Image: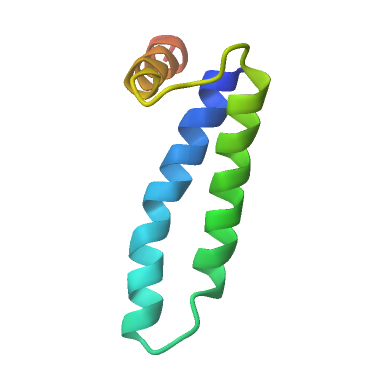
Length: 76
């Protein structure tokens, strides 16, 4: 599978986790769903880093996003 796509999905899930955590804490609930989302995001990011030869650096993330956007949304 495409490591850039796995990384992008992991980062998007991680970003969506932040509002879920704040929402659960504001409502006085335990952030169980948010914790599961953190585990999924971390697993996807770790999988992408381990599968790509040489790994990813922070500077590679924007280029990974752009390559995924160009590859998957240009065909629409």
